[in-house]
Image (cartoon, rainbow, N blue to C red; front, side, top):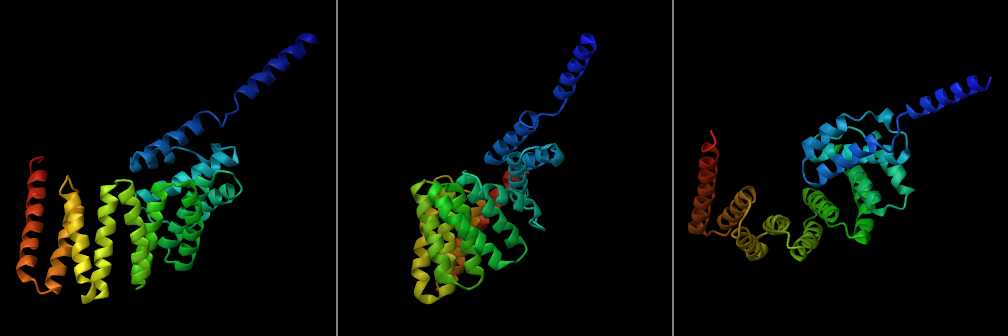
Length: 267
């Protein structure tokens, strides 16, 4: 009888040991996907997350992390969000957790889902929920995303003064963090707003674009340089400064030519 009990006990232990443990491989995969996203390997992160079966995630924490990471990976790969069933899992969990950083991120990406579905009220509501939390946690990357999207939203709805105020905050943050690319983007956005506001703001637009040009000259980004030159040429045309407009267009096409030669060297 003792031998039978011993065998049954061993069988029970063996059965329990075969049950998948959520804290091992699946959580490691989620952590790896998170690292890939942080390093801007968005397509690789999406592939990794695609290998995870949601049914294999046994804890609410793992389910929420997976939901947030997958929503983030879709967003970073420019895949349109069609519904909010996934991100709701993350929001519900992080709203009741002590992780404020993840809570802010969850609300931001819920806002992005609304934004993709043209729901302005939902977008603004979730962004405004995320903003004070991101300010509290000093999440610079998230704050930049929030200001960029809020600024764009306000701009496209004709709220130019409000959009400029948001981009001004983004410019200040980028300057403080010595983030040249985001700094240039903010300057170009503010210059475009100045042009929209009319002739009285043209000189301010020129100052911002020339400042962006100076920043880019120390090792710039070609797409941003082209955007800056396009805006500057348009501005000079509005101002009636034809020669400067032509010269700026010429510089634009020099960049176009250099880019074409660069790619041709790899063919």
